[in-house]
Amino acid sequence: MGIGKLFGGSQEPTLEEVHAQQGRRPSAAEAIAVDRRRKSVSDRQITGASQITTRQSIVPVSLVTLLFFLWGFAYGLLDVLNSRFQVALNITQGESSGLQAAYFGAYFIGPLTYSGWFLRKFGYRYTFMLGLSIYCVGALMFWPSAVKRSFGGFCGAMFIVGSGLSTLETSANPYIAVCGPPKWSEFRLELSQSFQAVGSVVAPVLASFVIFKNVGEDGQSLESVQWVYLGIAIFVGLLAIVFYFAPIPEVTDADMADQAEMTTGATNYDGDKPMRKQYMLFFGVAAQFSYVGAQVGIASFFINYFTQARPDLNITKGHQQGANFYAIAQGLFAIGRFSAAGLMIFVKPRWVLLTYQTLIMVFIAAAIGVDTGNGGRSPNWGGLSMLMIVLFFESCIFPTIFALSLRGLGRHTKRGASFLVASVCGGAVVPAILGNVADKIGTRKAMVVPLAFFIVAWSFPIYLNISKGKELDAYRESHVGTSDGAIDPDSKLGSISGAGGLHGKDLEAARVEEIKRY
Image 1 (cartoon, rainbow, N blue to C red):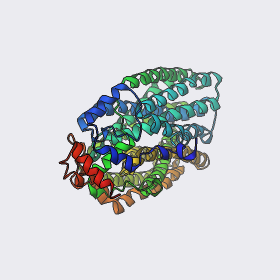
Image 2 (image 1 turned 30 degrees about the vertical axis):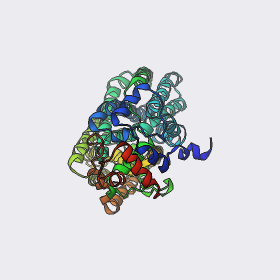
Image 3 (image 1 turned 180 degrees about the horizontal axis):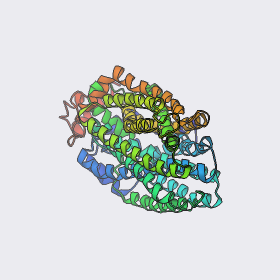
Image 4 (image 1 turned 90 degrees about the horizontal axis):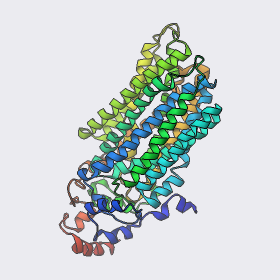
């Protein structure tokens, strides 16, 4: 497999291929009907899914949202296992970050190689099934790792789980963003990922009542971990079968290029711009890397922050109560996501992103500086409450950066999504730094590490609001997908078809004339 094929450039449609199909474009209803055949669709083919309405997208978007819950559940367990293994396997905070390194390291490899290629080759349905199958294998590997009490085995199993979930994210995030009217892209992804946050709340609660319930008198038992992941493996395997039969209309890169040419010209879409010149995408990738790294760092060591803030509790009790407080913090995270989704109905997503990221830095600085525990002699409730509020404002950042970074990519959409998912590997870097710094100066002061990465991510919404505001706002004015066959009058296709007045052979003839000008 050559480098070009590996990164998918050769699979993307050319503008000439897209233009040649626009006059005979299937309807959105036909695109939905095609999914029942359960065959993979060429990424160069216009299926008609570029015009799927909100009503038509409800069922497929709801099914894919279930995957976000699954991802959130796995992520919530990861953070609890981090602290659990420190006690059960007698390892340091720095060593325990190997779990995050394994999990998020898979995000760097998968999207840029096999999962990104698989998505462009076989489409969304089979990529969902591939991700679920890999996840199932990884969950099954937890059983022998627990029997052998092998931290290396757990890291290997977590790498496989991360490979499966990164494959799911490579397909699920862009699918939610593009399946429906472009004006609601950020809202759809924010709302769907809100259920990922719900999964992150359920996992620590389950951990508190199951994983921490039967750990033995010395806190060393890992038997409950085996049964939890066996249950996950069975559920995920059944879900993979469900997705084979699920109504998942394919949205190809040709569809996205077609949709971009239906969308208002105020977006300044240039469908012929090569991937290497998609500067907003690459800025978004850097911001996502920094943000995810900081978010994962805080989540990974939240329970450690709690135990150090509660010197009145022993280690086992501190970890158990820490898991409960982490569940509350994740509850705030989930509420924050739903609140941001609601705000995006009325407020521009770029404004929501800038506001939430600014408040993240305010409250994490407070979590570092506030110590109401008199230097470790009593509980530091002040610092702990500030850190919990950070999770509320973290809520909307990942999906909003993701959706905004995909804007205007057209035929590069799937490849751009692969880069954005790969940037999640920041979660493998920052926790390792934070864990080793925390071993030396304490977890509270070590939170300066994620603060530094938050500052890098903060530069992205500043750039968007200063340089890209008008282009991003134009998508919210688009009528594409709001009704059957809608085309914006000032779009490339709208100007050809007389504000959407031509169809079928008339549009095909007009398109031929337009092609001659390219």
